[in-house]
Image (cartoon, rainbow, N blue to C red):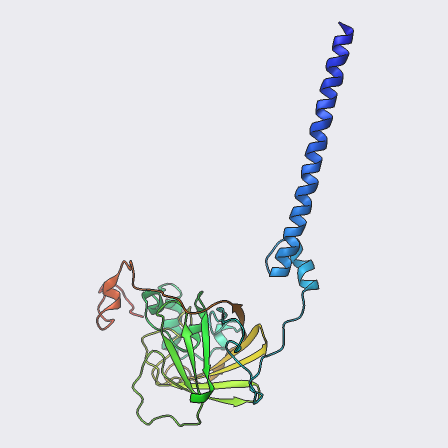
Length: 292
C-alpha cells in the first residue's frame, strides 16, 4: 500500500514537473516570438516594446530625390515604386493661441460655432482645396509633369478630384471664376515650392475644424521635401474679408507612404443624405441656425 502511494506521489510529481517545464518552454518561446515581433514592429514603424530599439537602429531616411536640374522631386521618383503623402494638416491654428489669430469678430464667431456644428462640406463629398487636401486619411499623390511645367495634386479618396499648379511663370488671370480648388501658380525659392492660390469660393472648409475664409482669400503654401520620407508644409492666410491681417501657420509634416496611388472611390455611394449633394447648398434644413 505504501509502495503504491509512493508510486502515485512520484507519478504526480513527474507530471507536474513535465507540465511546468512545458509551460516554461512555451513562455520562453512566446517571449522570443514577442521580442522578434516587437523588433520587427520597431523597424517597421509600429508600436510595442521593440519600437524604441527599432527607432534607435533604423537607418536614416534617404536624402531628398532630385531632378536632373537639381530641383527636388515632390512626388514619386521615376523608376521607383509609386507612392503618396499621408495626411498631416489638421487645424491651421494648431500650436497657436486662438486669441493670437487675427479673426474679424464674425469670423471668430463662425469658427467657434463650427466646433459644435461640424457639418463640413468635405464629409458630403464636396471637393476641398488648398490645405484641406492634406487632411484626408487616404492622402494625396503629387504628379509632376516637367514637360508641361505643371503639377497635379490628386485626392486619393473623398471627391477623387485634383488641383493643378502651374509652374510656367504665368500671371493670374484678371477674372477668375471662383471654384473649390481655385487657381494655383507656383515658383521655387531654393528647395521650397511656393504656391499661391486665388479664386477660391466659400463652399468648402480650408481645414478640418472650419477655419473660415472668404472669396478674397489669397492662400500661400510652402512645400519642402526635407528627405525622401518627409514633406514640410506651411501656409499663409491672406484674407481681408475674414482677418485683420495676414497670418502664418506653424509647420506641419506629411509622411511618405510607398505604394499609395489612385484607386476607384465612389464617395456618393450609399450616402444617406443625397439632398445635401445637390442644388445650391442653401435651405437644406430650415431648422439649422447656421449654414456652413
